[in-house]
Structures are given as C-alpha cells and as structure tokens.
Image 1: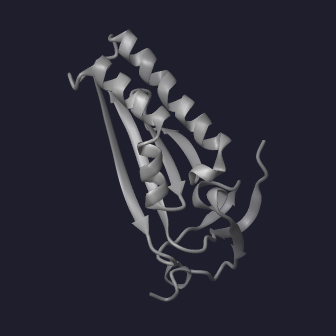
Image 2 (image 1 turned 180 degrees about the horizontal axis):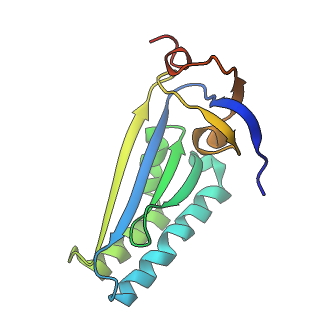
Length: 156
C-alpha cells in the first residue's frame, strides 16, 4: 500500500517538462491476435523506461478509461528525450510490428498527445493522496488550506 500524505500537496519540478499521453482503442475486440500483441507491447516499453532513468522519462501511469481504451500518462524531462526514445531501436521495432500487424485497418486505433510545459506554468493539488502524477514523477511539498490555483501558478 502506498504512503498516503494527509493534507494538501502540490507538485514541484524545476525547469520545463513534457506531458505525453498515449493510448489505444480496441475497435474490433474479436481480432484476438492483434489484441494480444497490443496488450503485451505497452507494458514492455514501460518496463524499459522504468529500468533506465537516463532515457528521460520521469514517470508513467496506466489509466483504464475503459477496458477497450487504456491510456498511459507520462512525464518527460524534455521533448528531445521523448523524441530520441521514439526513434530508439525497441520503440521503432514495436512500431514496425504494429503497422505490419494492424495495417491501419481500423481494428485497433492508437493516439498520442504531447504537451510542452514551461517552467512554473503548471498547477497541481493532491489532497489525502499517495504521490501521484507529476508529484510522483518529480517531487511534492505541502501547501496550506488557503492555497489557491492562481497562487500555485505564481499569481498569473
């Protein structure tokens, strides 16, 4: 069981960072061969990222929006590191295998969104939570009950 931090906390990270969202949607679940490949691909890539912090991924969390549409939230130190990983051998090989298997036929859909976040231009609050999201990927600190989103954004 993860440690719960009573009270209110906010994430702390120095410098710019990247939020990367990636997911898939199973459009035709009866295509078991394709589904089995996809179910094994993302966990393998996530284990690789977790095993080597030098790659630049600060943390990943898988979220099941629904059984047919899992999503992964990632925090990266920089876009350059994310891009380098996208061109790395393991990722490239899986990407090639995915397109050979799926051939953009619509059985399984994939998507991603990349957001660059400039230093200080983010806001988070966690109440009575274990470290999660950006707070787990970077760091966190307690904030008082009077803390407001505008103040955490530097009064912007």
